[in-house]
Amino acid sequence: MGTVVQLKNQINNSYFQLKNSVEDKLLLVEEKIKFKLTSDVELVQKMTDYHLETGGKRLRALLTLCSAKMCGYSKGTRDINLAACVELIHAATLMHDDVIDNGSLRRGKKTLNKIWNNQSSVLVGDYLLSRCFEMMVDDGNIEVLKLLSSTSSKIAQGEVLQLQHQGEIDMLEDTYLKIISAKTAELFAAATKVGAILSDIKNKEKEALEFYGRNLGLTFQIADDTLDYNSELKLFGKKIGQDFYEGKITLPIILLFQKAKDQEKENLKNIFLKEVRSEEDLNYTLNLIKKNNIIEECYQKAQHYINLASNSLSLFSDCEEKRILKNLTSFSLARNF
Image (cartoon, helix red, strand yellow):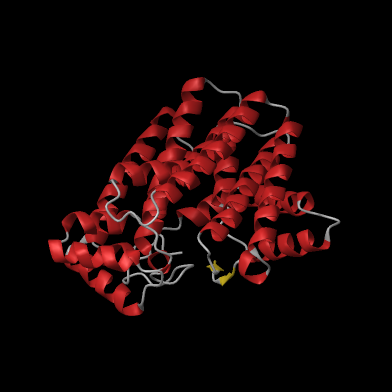
């Protein structure tokens, strides 16, 4: 697997290759999102404009566009519409997430709920979802409608499952995986499968791309949660310890608690029972993580999902899109933004 420092030094431009491969369509996705979020209600327009200005990687939309291209979809604009749809589901879940977590920063900027309020953020998130469902109905494909509506339901259930286990420092690793599978991996899986559905290919290929997306999503979320405790990698959209201060129990903490000595376990329990955690608490936790090689262990676990995602593409003929998607599995782990 290599060390964390090697990961930091690894130059992996697969994300930019992905973006460049469908850049013309991505611009149309941005236009579509902007058009769909137009509102006569002044506050809705202000909040959606602000959301659009905060940007984002648009990774899920890119996955839909690239999957459709790899599967041979070339005529029409359904890929653009559904890539925009996938992004709107993602954006809505982020707005709801920030309210639940009482988040104050996302992508280095103040969250909507901090600038306006929780009520407005929840309602604007609902507005995005309703726009998304309009687009799904407009597409007219029952398989797409079933997939994306089912995905939205699973994401919501993942949020509730996370709330149910909030602050549970002895959480099972299996529970954590169920949470991130529902909250993150399901939408990745839907994004890639939608691209396959558009191309009207065999079920085996659709399932392979869905499997690819799900395992890519698991890798992505494990990396995201690990970066929060990785002081070796500073270049990231959120400051080190953001999840820690919010009291989220993620893989690094789960693995650390398993390895910690009795007194250390007691200390960690007390830290996560606090309403507010201090910088001293974070430093104590970071030292334990370093001592027990937790970062490396997290990356090793993520490598398992990288292998699954990469192997699932063997069904497809060699092409530029396949190469990019294969390389993307490494980006999701080695990225530092």
